[in-house]
Image 1 (tube, rainbow, N blue to C red):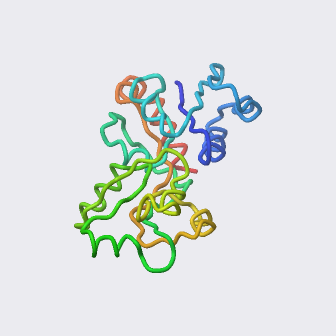
Image 2: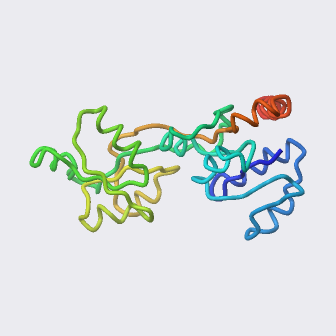
Amino acid sequence: MRIAVPRGALMKDTLERLDLLGIDTTEVRANDRKLLFEDAGLITMRPSDVPTYVEAGAADIGVVGKDVLAEHPERNVYELLDLGFGRCRMVFATVEGEDPAAEALRRLGIMRIATKYPNMASAYFEKTGRQVEIVEVKGSVELAPLTGMVHGIVDLTATGTTLRENGLVIREEISVATARLIANPVSYRVKAAEIDAVVEKLRAR
C-alpha cells in the first residue's frame, strides 16, 4: 500500500501516526528533498496535491486538510477518518478599524476579496447574501488588503498571529478544518481489509 504524506504543517503529526502503524518513517524525517520512499511505501508532496495523487491511484490512501477537500469537492476520493490534528479556522478578515468590506458593500453593493480558496469563499458569501468579486492569490494573501487591492481576505489560520502581525482582524469564522484520511475508491475495494485495519488503528489511538 502506498500512502500520500503532506509536507508542511501536517507532516510531523502525519509521520507520528504512521509510526504507530509500524511504518518506518526514519528516512522521510532525515531527507527533506527526497519525495518517493518506496521501501516505506510513502510519497511526500504539497498538501493540495494529495487528493490528486490519491484520486489517480498513485497513492492508495493519504492525509489532507479538510480545507483542501472542501475547496475541491469534485475529487473522487473517500473521506475515511477525521484524524483530529492540524486544526485551523477558515476566516474572513479585513484591516483593523472600520470594516472596509462592510463599507464597500454599503457604497458599491459589492466587495473585493482575495483568497487562495475561491470556491469556499464564493460559496460562503453567496450563502450569506453578499456580492463579491473574488481575486485568487497564490502567495501571501495578507498583502492584498494592505496594498488596497481588495477589501478583505478569506484564508486559513491556526493561531491568528500572522493576521495580527499584519494589522488584520478576523471579522467572521467560516469553518474549522482538521486533517482527514482519504482513500482511492478502487484501492478501498481491492485492499479493503488492509485499509480498514489502518483506520481502526488510527481511530483507536
